[in-house]
Image (cartoon, rainbow, N blue to C red; front, side):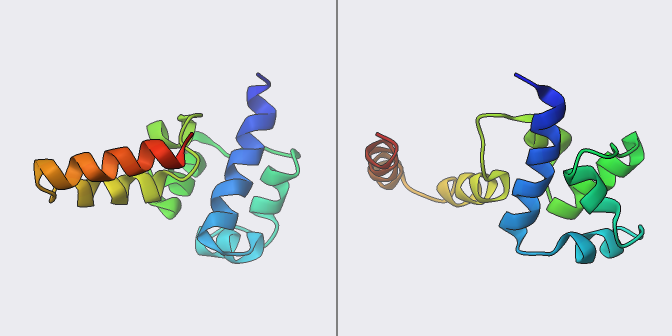
Length: 103
């Protein structure tokens, strides 16, 4: 796997899921208008602090950012939180439904 390529794509993927433009995200992070655009277009990488701010902006942990098996980490966290409120029987029904959907 080309991790550099993956990193740039991951930022774009999460930004699109959040429904914000690269410009708006850049400005929200206190950066220049083109900051995220430069990251997504492989012209630069964020500093470690910049990366942590990006994760904070998306509402995810660095671990969630790098989890290649989780496409939508915010939604997965929400599902997990809600699943904890279910009875054992309800959780079993949801689990069967999820398995059916991912076939």
